[in-house]
Image (cartoon, rainbow, N blue to C red; front, top):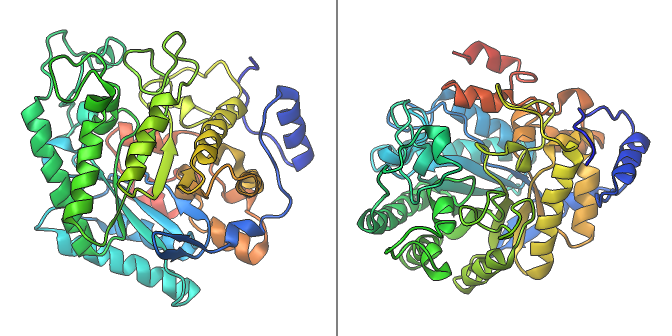
Length: 441
């Protein structure tokens, strides 16, 4: 395994040589026009194949309404030109908020979210014309073991986990969420989806990634005597029931999910892992779950892997880790290649499913070349930027008008945006976001 290195490639020759020397399958295309093709999903035409991933800003008002920075951020994404904007994690209940400034959609603030949608669409059309209509997805979440509604850890856990529990100092007898509470939460997710539809969102995402509640339930092999643990049918029940209920009760809205397809946590505490070696993925259950989602007309899926609280480099290859974390014993390109490989395997297994890929931020200005090659090879449908969009919201605009991304505006994968969130601050790009710095508290 090659040691960790920071990004240092000023030209494509050195970049491609490194990929070759590491023996990795990361394709590269000189032409990037395929990224600007229109694409149809569920009867809606997206203006291009770019997506903005959900990344929390922690800048909501006390009651969960979008704040000044929230409006500004999404207007910037819209003006930047991406064809899909995936709005950040929005709690369905106070108990499930990851921090006191996480967005939360309620009956009282539905109109504030409606204004957010309207102003986002207006910013898009001002910059690109009336025919440019990005698909707007709202991510609905319950933070589960990472809940901090008042700024202090208040975990809601689905199973006891000897790997993750010590990170939160949880005692061995810490209570699990009851089946009756999960049944009630199903309907709360549905109510939130109704509000999202009324606010004007095109789709809702049942967040099932990164170890939050829905994600943890998928891995709850050791949850005993429960309708939500043990067997595959029980572990997937919560996600599938919510999706079915939303499809039945909220006509006109697209249902999707950002799904952790591989947790990289040892079995029986991780989903999508090889039972003998969690360093390897086993996507058999992941594929089985996707087949069930397809049966209820889920036509769009956002792929992720890993848990940012445990081996964060699996989901977010970086130059620098968050404070106190160690550098991984692998080159970041291994992490990029892992994400590309898993996404490609699923896309090729389900060619009719629109899959949003991730893991491109570390590539900097070579992102569009790699993304184009992947699309041409049928290994992904849309390409998303999370940290990359936060740092460089107008990257698509630059690609359209200048033909390339500006190296001095790309994300540096320094993890400082993640550190801001962990420290309880508002989130922005500390390195590139000059105007953001005045808002840091």
